[in-house]
Image (cartoon, rainbow, N blue to C red; front, side, top):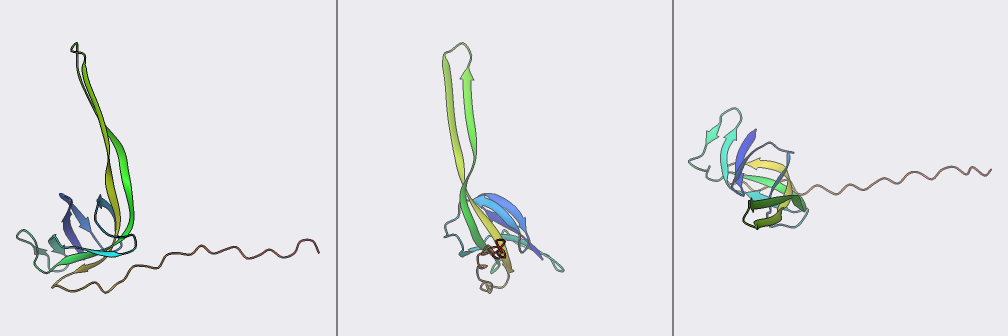
Length: 128
């Protein structure tokens, strides 16, 4: 099953366990957020929204907040001694899609536990 969602003025086609970068969304790292603007649900019987599907939402886990690449806007008017340089970086939220929900259901999957790096086993005494 897949869904087409709208967030930050853009549309994304998502399936469970997708990782995507969207415009900044409020939420702490590790929490579950619900994206309510679902434009289409696909699968055996696709549903189209007019413009959205009532009661449908997508649950996603917030993985990270970061900044995008630097974008520089430079304008110059030749022979006029006029130029302007501006730059900015977008605020980005990294999400992992956990569930696609229909009919007003609540998310049943919580955030995944963080991975703990396994420490290597102590080596046998080589001085024997």
